[in-house]
Length: 428
Image (cartoon, rainbow, N blue to C red; front, side, top):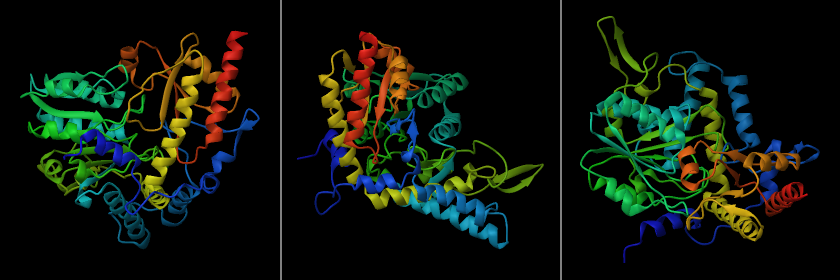
C-alpha cells in the first residue's frame, strides 16, 4: 500500500534516525552552548520563544565568524595569495556542507544569497523573465510576504496572474482546491514547506507530484523547515528550495537557493558584477558557470563560514532528536493553551512544527507581548509578514511562541505563568 504524502511528511518530522528511537536531547548541555541564554531581561531569566523570527547562535558559530575575520580575511576566488586561497577553501567547504545537508545532487546546485527573500526574488526575476500575459503563478494563502510580493512584481512586469490556494479553519491547505487551480497556464508553484505564522507542515511531496504531472516546477520556501525537519531535495523532487541561515542557528545576511542544475543553467543571471562573468568586453559579456553566475560581487564570506558551522552543529545534535524534543514542547504548550480561559489557538493543523499562534479575544496581541516581555518572555506579536493569512482568520495579529532545540518544558510553563499575569492585569 502506498504511503500517503501526509504520512510521509509526518515521518520526516518525527521519525528517529534509522536503527531506533532518537536519544533525548541533553538540553542543559545544549543551552550552555548558547551564550545569550544566560541573559536576564527585566531582572528575570530570558525565556526566548521567538525562534521563528531568528534563532540564537551557539558559540561555535560565533567563533567561526570571528575566526574568519581574525585569521582568514580576504576575498574569495580572485587571489593567488595564501589568505585568499584559505578563505576560498573555507567558503566553498560550506557549499559542500549545504549540499550534503539538503542532499542536492551537485554542489553547483547550491547558490549563496542573502536569505530566503533574495532566493525567491532571484527565481521570480530570472526564471520569471519568461512569463507572458495570461500565465499563472500558484501560491497559497499561508505564504510569508517574501513569497507573495516577488510574484506580484513578476505579474506586474509580465502580465501573469497570481492564483492563491485557500486554507481551512485549521490552517491546512485545501489540497483539492490547490489541484483545481493547477492549469495549462500555470508556470510555477511557490509555497511554504512550513508556515511561519501557523506552523502548518504542508504535504509538499504530494503537491510537487501534482504540479510535476502537469509539467509545472515547484519552489519551496524552506525558511521554517530546515531547523525542524530533515530536508532531502532529491526525495522531495522540488525544483527550487530556499532557506536562511539565521533561522538555522547561523548568522544573519546569508542564505541558500537550491535549484536543479538544468533549470539554473537555462536561467539568465539576475545581478551583474564581479565573479559572475567569464569574459567582459564593451561588445558583450559571457557568464560564469554554475553556481557563480548567480553570485555577483563579494559574498558574505564570514556568514558562509559560520553557516557551515551551524549546519554541522545541527547535524551533530541530530535533526530527529531535535524534532522529537520540539514536538514534545509543542504538545505541552498546546495542552496548556487549550486549558486557558479566553485563549484561542490560530492554526491547529494535524501536522505542525513547533509554532503556537494564539489570541486573547479581548486583548490585543501587542499588549500581550509587552506584558510578557516584562516577565522576561520573548515572543513575536503582529501579522508575522502574513497579512493575508491574518485576514483569512479575522484577526489583526496573533501572539506567536516558537520553540527551538534549547527550549525547555519549564520555559513553556514560564510562558503560561506570564500569560496568567496578562489576564490578571486586564481582568483587574
